[in-house]
Length: 343
Image (cartoon, rainbow, N blue to C red):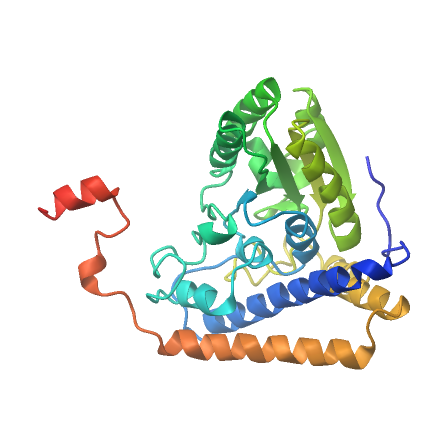
């Protein structure tokens, strides 16, 4: 298993400078998107609840950087970061959160059900562990049709209590499917510490099926990406499946309404992760130290991302809602839909 590191340590490969900057940019885009989404909720401009991904950006970015558009992912109720890292753009994302017709699911999916198949995103899922079967089925399809794409299944540590995970890992191991199970262990299952509800090692659960399992610092985007690149390449060669436990942290509560977290975690713990362990702060410091980008260049990049997000929010707020005549659309298959409306 890979060891935990306090800061990214490798020397920069100058030929990969643009890739390093892209990973940093993507993490900032996710953090900025979440800040705007949280503000929309706090000002009562967004319907329903949402679950923030802030703090976990290095997981989604480090893994998705190793994937192509034809590779697929499945996401979770805390899925904005996966969507952005896999190629989603701000306008359609905010339109979806606000229930507008230009959203990725025409405003009908909302925060927890965004899908973008043009970039291989099979969708977020509000059911804990609900996408595990979808991801494994996607990998089975690739193997049956002789295609070399890989599927990554993102889920939280709480989802390791779902029996579906063990059913699909058994099948994936038997059939050597090109799937990577990425467990985002942020230390808490809703309001309970993972250590209080999960006996033993999470990686050992995969190893029981003969699946190679790895643990990595989920706050170190370089370490995450290095491992993901290796495992994705191996999965393409038919050496999968694999399991990764990514040790990370969510800065907000379980959802945006969970604002009084003192009863289950301390302010000192939050401060430690937000300063010494923050993936964006760490990567920024590394970029400057390695001479890849100057502070002024990074500040300009961050400012442009903030402007892009603010412009996208304004666009989404002005965008139209779906027409009421679309109430049946995308609910049934084309055949059933045609029958239902009497065509």
